[in-house]
Length: 176
Image (cartoon, rainbow, N blue to C red; front, side, top):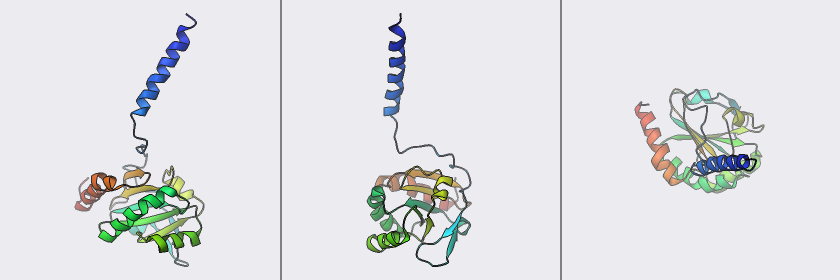
């Protein structure tokens, strides 16, 4: 009998681990989905004295992309964001997270700047308000300022084609 209890505990833990292996690690539920996007006002990268407020995006469907120069995965997704920006389908606002302004400006100069602007989150406080897990993360926000989607990790072409762009089109059309 005393060997049966550890065996049952081991079996239960094994079942939970097997269930977990079937889950997609990039799909983490966000409490923000369907709720107003956290508001912020931050300095704009490379624009002395300029401030950006999320309030400025009301009436537009837009993406918020949290990135940093120290983020290897951000470098992976960056060319896709530059390509998307070139298509003019949706405005992308960058949120540079806990980075150095000079490095961020150099990054955008060298790799291209897909952002209508980049807000600077030096302290990381705004990232926390948005439920940030780790760079990069991308949010889709509707015309009313409601968060409709959160993508954790680098955006891949399939993510754009299958999820993000169809959602943007739906939101632009006024559905959802």
